[in-house]
Image (cartoon, rainbow, N blue to C red; front, side, top):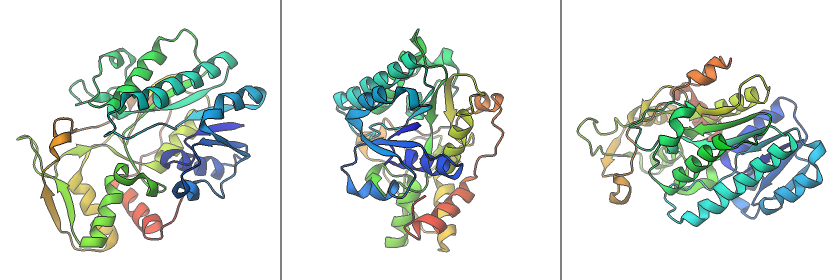
Length: 321
């Protein structure tokens, strides 16, 4: 039995699809299943039971001998949410309860961290454990992930294997429900269809041109492959970056969406909203050397190939993975 939290959400539902493609059938989906717009992400996937988020620990206590692995990918991910209590409950206290259960019962655990922990990037993007306590996130969401990473590293009781994955800028199928928190690829696709034009943020720094801000964009299918690799129990426990390892500009992304749609490029630049301007990341790039040293050698999908697959095979067809 493999337990997946956030199973109705974007990343976790794609991880489920990856597990199913590899023959896994004893899957338990955990989430808040009240949101009907997320139903298509999990209906039809192999699942032995749906468990509401608040009943997870009770369920695990009743089935402890059957649990092989826990993938704790559910979280509150809204970077614009400023109510710390929301993150305290869902991202910290809940995650500590899951960790404690896995540690007490010898169950391996993979959990979702975030590249938002790196803040403005002034300390670099290394997943070296020695650097983790010094990181300074720019928003409550990032701080909640940072606090849990620091807490996990300090725990004397740990699961037999554990990995915290610092997801960088993830895009791909199954994010239809995410609204403003959906990827730039998703929003670019819809902007271009509706207006024939893509709006990108201007640069408010002299060292970056408009649209030249860079992020490490990773296709969600690659995340599913890495998680499958880590479940093989050959890697060392710890915190790992999970990006492509190559920063690309928003201009590159925009051009890729136009190309996938077969449309002529038309890009305009608008001011970054004042309320997020001082918290805006201009550069992220995952140092992927730690994961590579653990033996993961698969290539990461290029931005162009990922955009093409996403646009042509999913967005254009309103299809889920």
